[in-house]
Length: 243
Image: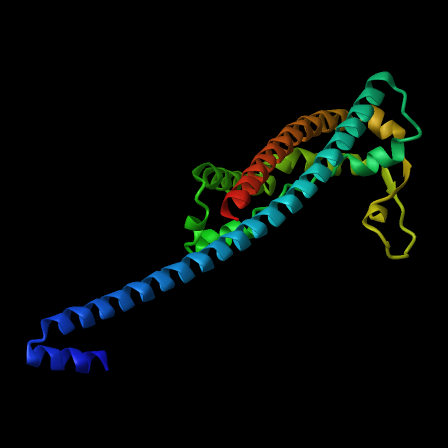
């Protein structure tokens, strides 16, 4: 309709009409572009909020798991220390002996990567996070966790595996023939050969090596917790700015 009027005006050399019709077209295109930009901006803001909420949920879960692992590492260090002290003094803490022997050859779980962050990277949508410091910390956490998990499955845990091997000689496990109902029942100790612990030099060496690993691992977990807490604080600030 507008094009037909504009063509007619050009034939008649009605320049006033040409200008008015042209302005109408330009203004209409401008309004359409503004509406499209507004819609795109609104959708991006919604997408950003969803991304930030997913990241926050991810890291709140990892913080909970990390705190639990740190608590477990403290208990592991205490148990290992009690057994080392018992070998040096020749006296066992009978109240905790069975639990200590069943427990010391384990290690806590390292927190996992953020699935939401890895999805952002994979889909090329990391630009939704405008805070450069937050992006850097997300990359740093992801890299350190992937590296930690790589060494966690290799030589890093070898001393703990060695402790499990040598300490097994002193254990008599509960073998009732009834399947365990909880994970705490798996590997439960029925009795301990104290002479093996006291007299086998491999046991003391394995305990001390495992203690070093457990202590280092505790520091790694604390560092992970600090990283997660810093990320969560930045995520909360970013959500406030994006809302």
